[in-house]
Image (cartoon, rainbow, N blue to C red; front, side, top):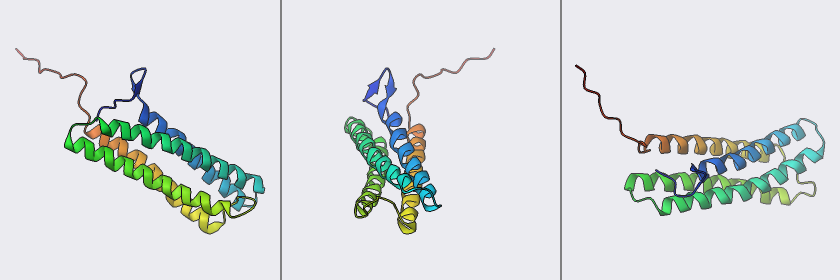
Length: 151
């Protein structure tokens, strides 16, 4: 599946995926530090990392939707839709986590919410890896090599 949305010859969507993924991972680390006895400021930092990750994730889904819109092959379109659905599922999980954290005054997560956060991060990592595998498996080669005749 070739991306239509490119900057300097590189596809935008795979690059954008790394920003929310990193922000969500850092949020989990901040929450772990908070649960292990760190200051409540770590929980607040995790909260704002999730907010920034959701904003970046929306951009990822939009870039993926633009790519899927211009795909003509049936298998490639299915892969793009599957990848976008996985990204949207992760965003929904983190949005629910964010809404539950908004109910507490200091925005920290308890042990149960931290477990859900870990599951959401695992889904995000799996979705990024699996999406890359599917795209690489069905990518058209940039050039075709012709076999060289041996004497």
